[in-house]
Length: 436
Figure (tube, rainbow, N blue to C red):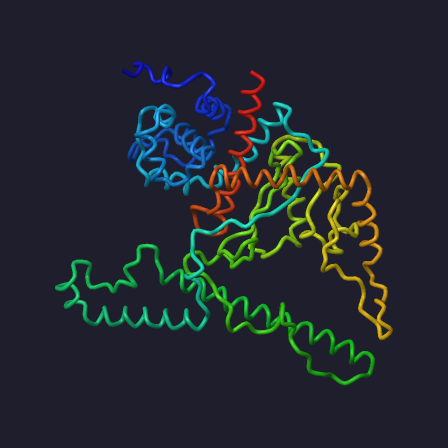
């Protein structure tokens, strides 16, 4: 009872046709460059079809390769995009992994298309971050002592398996490999990677404390004072025997967020007043205070790659980005900043008479409070709440992108840019659909 032609299965204004048109405008050479031109090897699916399939799936919030494979059988739009083919989930996952850098460029491509349609207005941009869960659980985190004990146990099991190889072969068709070593995802390698990260972090903290002690004692020696022993700062220098690393995704971090904690990454975006994302990055930082300057650089790079010559005149962020170094003019070519003063901002140390002494940053606090109290400052605060926060809502709630499908900082960064790029494509599709 279905029409004989696949093109008659969907209405003309369907999202699938829009995605096909978008793929036709992309430079697919970055995908085709990795395939052999001599015809040797197994025939591959057309990269145009695979890119269109992934873009459409991410637009709908379908990011599991097994779910995409199932949709290619059950869903008409997926069958149209796949040309009535049905790539298996392994092929889809490997394509996404093999071309992760090329797929990340979809953000720039989407921004270029949105700019052509007149959707990118860089007068005022909004910056914010959100916590996205990693493809790992908090229970997979281990301390250095736990990791060393587990590595020692696994190596001991490996030695025992080598000495009793003949017996294992008779008892087990896999050669008697212990279950802990039979993990196809190389659990031992991930344990060693997590161990190396904890050791490197401990060495970095110790080196930071030693350098600060050396500088302070050199200053005392210059004033004719004897050297003294200092205490390490708890936040950045003191040893952390209870520090943990996740053995499933060692790059992920234990993060605090509203409503609880998670094992994940800190995802950052810069968006316009029209909720078009113009820059997207992820970081391992537990808060946003150091992300202003890196995101300004990311904004400049992304807009330059998209061929957008304009620069924003103002940037709005929440109090999580407040610190003196962000607003004292030390960031080159920074737009006008509207960042509410955080409650933890320094106000000067209290004196014996109970009054606070003058702080070196008092004038920055006063200037920003005055700027935020103006009618324009109040308008900017409202604009942030109705732009960047709903953008995160559309990504995390409407498209269920609350958890990364891949593991590792680079892989998750690529996936985040793909998520943000498809967000822009949805904005462009709705704009064209509304305008007829």
